[in-house]
Image 1: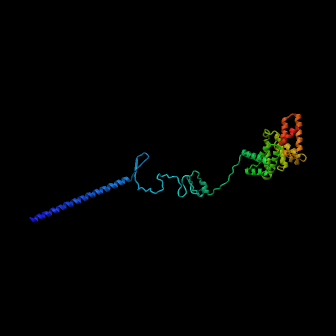
Image 2: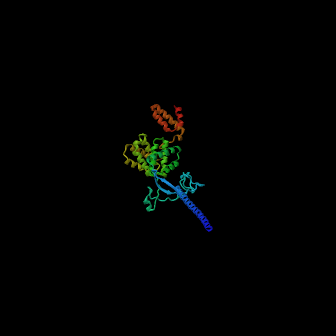
Image 3: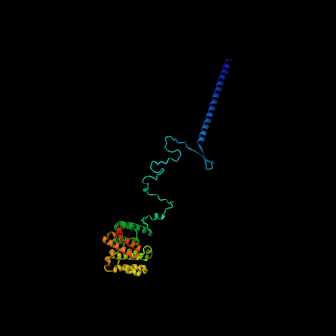
Length: 344
């Protein structure tokens, strides 16, 4: 009996241990499964957090992509909006209001085949020749520039300065200088016409030749009727210019006969005849030095007084105020007009 009891007690003890062992084993398996479930849940949750849903323009999901881990923005200078503050780059190029690196404009540019200004011919030949092209001034521009130079020359009287100004214009048609200078002098007083003759003589030794001067007189003779609209005595004045040019050796004497045969217009014939008369008169070449007379400021006082007396006598006999005024203006002595009042 004792053995049976002891055996039964042993059996009970063993059964209790077995139950305890089974319970412990079951609990460990359950805890392992719970841990596995929690681990899988964490992995799935983490994967869901890494998934970014991309939307198209129509706000419809079209794809999924896994984004890598975010970088740390701590202590970084890069802008977080993706645009930047417009500051230059560290290399010195780019940035707001910056064209490029210093000296980049001196570097050779790469040829772009898609450039609309691309020319394949120049690249195939391999030689590009650059030429300096100076645009030619129009006739109106030459007239305007010549007028300003001549009027300024009337003020200072320096032919060298006037010639330098003409040379700066760099015009191939030099005859236009002579043509416009004489045309301007037709509307001015005799002293300015004398200065124009001196300017033509100096231009002949520096810029123009006989062909240019002859071409200018040819144009003036052909357009003499138009010039007479502003200057009625244009044939006489132009004849004086032509004779003075021959006397200054700017034109050959035979040019008079050539103009007489070439131009048959009435006023042109009068002009040529006037020049021929001045050249064929006794001591004509010497007298042509004073063809425009002596300037008012250079005339002696006795001569001016005598001219004032003759002017008053002619006015008293004719009563022509316009003629008396014209004679007074031609004397070119505005500072001596008090003598006219005194003699009157």
